[in-house]
Image (tube, rainbow, N blue to C red; front, side, top):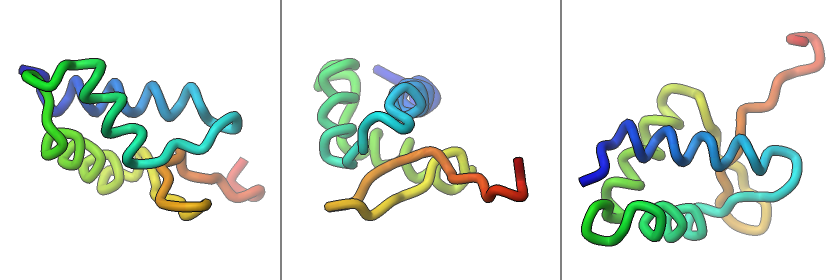
Length: 80
């Protein structure tokens, strides 16, 4: 059984690898995570919990580009 921490790590690394290249939609990510860990080891509920924790911890944010997407938080120009 995949732990929430393992799912969170996988999601974050996946979103990070797509940063600036591709928009990651929630249903696509959910399906990808379940395929990676296997249906017996990971459920939609597990993915949803992991996403919620990543959003609450401000490691990822929701975007709305042709549907709900997941992305890294944007930094303001003055924050650089």
